[in-house]
Amino acid sequence: MQKDLFSPFSMGDLTLSNRMVMAPMTRNRANDGGAPTALMMEHYRQRATAGLIISESSPVSPQAVGYPHTPGMYTPDQTRGWLRLVNTVHSAGSLIFAQLQHCGRISHPSHQPGGTAPVAPSAIKPKGHAVTANGFQDYVLPRALTLSETEDAVEEFRLAAVNAREAGFDGIEVHGANGYLIDQFLRDGTNQRLDAYGGTLEKRARFLHEVIDAVTGVFPASRVGLRLTPENSFNDMSDSDPQGHFEQIVASLSDRGLAYLHVLEGDMTGAAPMVNYRKLRDLFRGVYIANNGYDKARAESALATGAADLIAFGTPFLANPDLVTRYRLGLPLNRIDQSTFYGGDETGYTDYPSASEALVHARSTEAA
Image 1 (tube, rainbow, N blue to C red):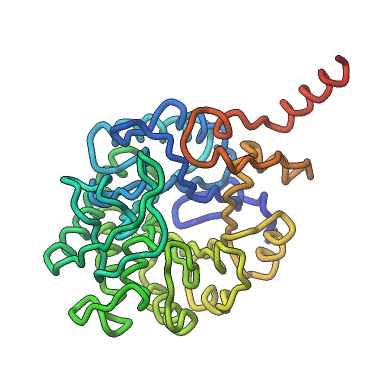
Image 2 (cartoon, rainbow, N blue to C red):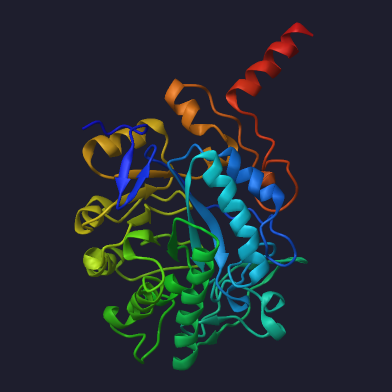
């Protein structure tokens, strides 16, 4: 059976038109109430030739917020905004999953209800600076969640899944990656608890499994994906044995019937990978989405060798709304403007030209 980027793919009861996934990318374009905007609708519509779109991170509660102008999944207005966006994506021909997130300690009192400290598995202050409405500010010492508050956080994920279902999403992705709350529980550099949620790896993974239990009570497991980042140091993360620990974590997930496992392979800093991701892929009996620095050639190789079933692209989709067409026809890609990644207006968000638009512009420039 053909396994190139452009062949259809069956994922449970869903059929993806191709194997190219638009990765979740925070863009900070929601309104002041954390609701999706018309500008966001256009951004996603432009990229709806992807076989699957995974939305940018959507906080599951006010306490889960870590950045300004991120679209939440905990108020009726936010849910209505997502419904309009999801309908737009569906009308344009793509499927879309909502990525549900709790930032945990990667937040700031200015984002928190009542100006309180962010929460975390353990009271360990991250190095670096929080993004706030007033610019970068030092992270603060987070407060360790109590046992009852941990249960409350699980319930927040469940309620957010209910809202995602009401908004018409095809499924959800649990954000267990990139140094946010679930990842903070999983890795021993940030989880130093000695209760039911810390100490052994099984206990550190308890919060993740409880979240999955909660959201699969809303969506069937075949419509729930999970993102992991075993060795990503982003957000001051570390683990004493990422290979061994995440082999056990992935193995524990393999029989849960999830839609997919989405893995950021390596470190966002560009450091050489230390984890054997093929081993993780082989341990997971299900759909595996590979992510991090893939171009067309590397993606095709991963599919051909069975190292992945689907490939998630981040910045290539950011700068090329018609990435599927460009890769299929071998067309050049737009230059990426990193200065417009986060916040702002349509610049660097909805104004990247398609290949046909770029050609028309080039011809008009030559004629002039």
